[in-house]
Length: 89
Length: 501
Image (cartoon, rainbow over all chains, first blue to last red; front, side, top):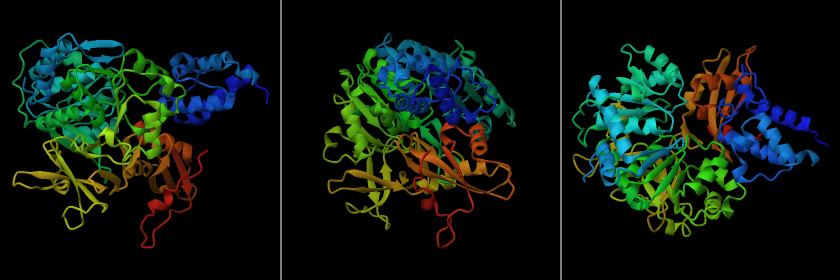
C-alpha cells in the first residue's frame, strides 16, 4: 500500500479514536491537543501507540525518541513519522 | 541522632546535610533543610487549626514536593496521614472520608473540586486545602511517640471493601531501617521513583531515601519514556524501583541495554512477581545493576527480598525475610510447612501493622496470637513455599484479587459498579494474563433482554467511577456465565486469555 502524508494523519487519528477516545465521547480531539495532558493516553497507552506506529509505518523508534515533542499530539506524531520518511515505505 | 518516628528521620538527615537535595520533582530541587522547615510549618499550621494527636488527614496529591511535605508535616503534627490515589473519584473518596473521618483533606488545585464534593457529603465536613494554605510559622506541636498512629493506608482486601492498614511510627521507622540496610542505601544514592506516593511501595521510596540522606527524584508516572531514559543518564540515577509493567516497557525499549548507565547500581521489583523471562530481560537491559526481587504487603510494608547474588541459583524466588524479621510458611495444621509444601506465608517483626482501621474482625483474621502474649503475627493470606535452603516462593493469592499495573483490583468493586447499570443482571470481573499489565481486567456481563447498553458504554461508565487502573480493558457481553458443578461462578473458566483485538 502507498502511504501519503494524509494517510499517516488519518491512520494515527483512527488508531487513537478506536483505542482511546471511546472513554471520552464528549471530547472533540484536535490534532494539536496534548494527548497525555488531556488524560487520553497514559504511559502504557503511549507504549502501545509507539508499538503501533513502529509496526504500521515500519519505523525503528529509539528509546529517547519517545518524548512529548515527538508523540505529544497527533500533529507531533505526523511530523515525526513524516520526518522519518515513513511515507515512502 | 536517634530516629524513632518518621519526623525524626527527616530531622536527622536535615541536620546532617541541610543543603543536600532531598527531593527533585518537576525539575525543582528541594533541599533537606527546605523539606524539614516546610514540614514544620505545615505541622504548626495544622496544630493551629486544632488538628490533634491521632486525627486523620487525607492526602490527595500527585507525586511532587507538596506530597513529601504533607507526609512529614502531618506526621510531625502527631496526626495520621491517609494517602489516596490522586485519580480517585469523588464517590470513592467520599467512602474513604466516611470510614477515616479525617479532619482535613490536603489536595492541589486540580483535585480541589473532587475533594470538595467528597467532603461536602460528610456530616462533619473536613477542611479542604492545599499545603501552603495550611502552613504557618507558629509553634510546633509536641511530637508523637513511636507507638502513635502514623498512617492509615487504604488497600483492597478480598471482599473489595478497602481496608485501612494502621501503621504506627514504630512500624514505618523499623521497616524503613530494614530496607535501607539490605539495599545498602546511602547518602550518595539518587533514586528515581515513578511509583505513586499513595502506594506503599512508592511511599517507602520517600522514607528510605530520607532516612539514608539520599536524593529522591520523583516523576508523576512513567510518562513519555524517552524522558525517563534521559533522567536515568543525566541525573546519574543509582537506584530504580519499579513494578513488572514498568520493566516490561523498559526492557522492550530499543537501545536502552546499549546505554552504559554507569551510576545505576540497583533496580528493585515489587508489587507483582517478575516471570523468569522478565528477570532475564531486566538483567540484559541493566547489566551493571543488581536486581532485587521483593515481595511486600501494605500490612507490613515489605516481607522479603532476594539477595541479588542468589538470582542465578533461584530466579523465581523472592528470597528471605527482611533484616530483623521472620517469615515462614505455615501448613494447614498451623505448624511450619516442610520445604516444597505450600501453605500460608506468616510474618513477625516490628514492621507488622497494628490492625485495620475500625475493623476488629478483619484485624483478628489477619493478626494472630504470636510467640509472646503481647505479640501478633501477620497471616498474609498469600500462599508460598520454600526450597530446601529456606528461600521463599510466591505460589498464589488465596483470594481473587487482580494485580494490574502493579495495583490491586478487587473484582467485586468493579462488579458493583457494573451492577449500577440498568439492564445488567450479572457481572463477573477477572484478571487475564497480559504482557504489559501483568493482568488485564476483563468484565463479563449478562444483560436482560432489550437492555440498552454495549461494551463501550459499560467501559465508559466504569471509567467515570473508578480509578484508571481498575477500568476493564475489555467488556464481553455473555448469554450466561460459566458455573462450577456446585453452581458457583467459574472464575477460572472466564480467566482463560481471550484473543485480543
